Length: 226
Image (cartoon, rainbow, N blue to C red; front, side, top):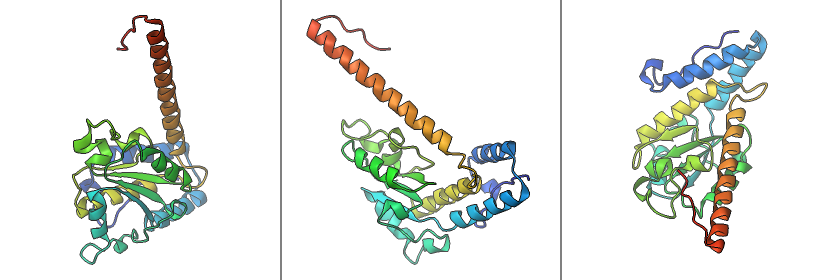
């Protein structure tokens, strides 16, 4: 069975940006192959999941105020099935990080992400969450939430308008429709590689710190890492 491009009723496929990434996901699904029964059931499940996304909001700054506008009558995110915002990570489909993330908040954010059920998704909303924003050079701000958890959709802006949030959520819908629910999600392997690389970086940083401590105690010269 051939998997076709995901369709969103609100916008044409050509009006979206980053279509190359969606085409790559569709090509991976077609390369693995599936029969008609499982493929049609997979499409039905992905259609239902993409149109009933329950958000879990981790709002710390002004981006959270912009997200509140989506629930009002002017924008009404219930039209897309996004209105069931949960206060528990165990009942949410995706976590939307909104605002500045400090290193002191990072362990709590990672814990909430790990408590979410599979399949789970992450949206980085606003420049502070994407790259640190105006606080990028601060000693206490994380330079992008993708340094601690894998991100599926980026929403630039300071803060992004509600229309931009709808666009990012529709991008997440397309990504869900271009995934495989039965037989394993095609994102789990990438997420595993992310945490393995993160663990390797932390190990290298700890080894470097130990070498500097020993060199300082022995008064030996320290070679700067290039």
